[in-house]
View (cartoon, rainbow, N blue to C red):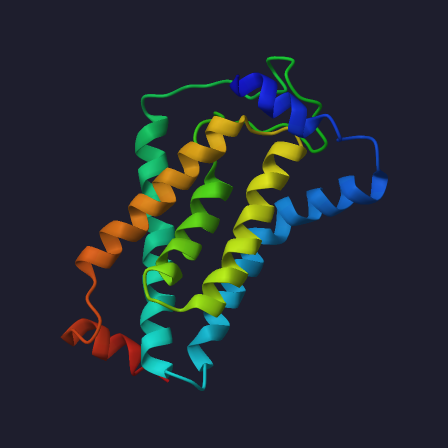
Length: 180
C-alpha cells in the first residue's frame, strides 16, 4: 500500500517541466522559507510576546524533532524509494536513509508549535507550507509516504514535548521573548 501510494503521487513527475521545477524548488527552499517566516514573527506588532513564545517554541520543536529523527536512524535503515524502483527521482540521490523525512519533521514541527499556541491565521499559512513541502518530497521521488508520516509524527512529538517543557511567561520565556 505504501509503495503504491508513493508511486501514484510520484507518477506525475516528469510530465510537466513547470510542475517538476516548482516541486523541486519547494523541496529545496521550503523549509528555509518556513524558518524565515518564523524568524520574521519576532517583530510582530500584535500580541508580540505570545507570538515570540510561539516562534521560540517552533525553533525548539524543529530541533527536537530532528534529534528524534537522528535517534530513529540509529535503528531504522530503509532504502530510498528510487533505489527500490518505486519512484522516478527528479533530484540528485541522497546518501542517507529514507525513514523518517527530515523535511516533514521540520515543517510539521513548526506548524504544530504554532497550532498549539492558538494562532489560527499563522497556523493555516504554516500548514499550507508544510503540506506542500511534504507533498513535494513524495512528488520528486525521494521519500515513501510513510517516511513523510513518520517525519510528521516526530515533528508533532517534538512540538508536544516543547509545549509541556517550555512554559509561556516562565522566567526563561520572559528573558528570551524580551530580547530586541
